Image (cartoon, rainbow, N blue to C red; front, top):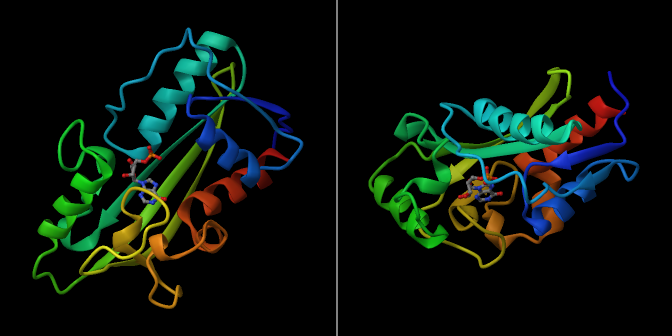
Length: 193
Ligand code: IMP
């Protein structure tokens, strides 16, 4: 594939960059999105479309290869919702707690609790070429929030093979052993070598 040493990351969130840095090879330098490139509207119908919108905005503005990711929680009994709208399930400016409450309410009385997290990570090159990967973790939605670690829907999601613990009951090291994000960036690291 392409041997990439330097990527401009579409997020301006320093914590996210540090997390991604730990998942890619040490030889790949990540640069923060320049402040001249604003936040991109995530208006595509799927994860790959949103990742592409974000990465294209940055590589068009900088002339450098850029990296963007997009994640969603897809619940079988809800026809794949919240999916691409995971951060806005309870409304446009919803907090994590509001999204968790909305998902619990939507799952009330449901027998089929199967769900999966999917992360798409996409690198776009200035010539318009791209590579992308998807990481998936399957599991189920538990019947009440459990655990205090992590973020987002972590208190409601118990991954298969995780001894029944939710992501929020795991350490970050444990979560990263099986998470959608580490699967995606692990695969991307191999592609960029
Ligand atoms: P993003 O594309 O990484 O910003 O993720 C979109 C939304 O998915 C977030 O606002 C969270 O609600 C949810 N999400 C993403 N990753 C995770 C995770 O690892 N655990 C729990 N929720 C997550």
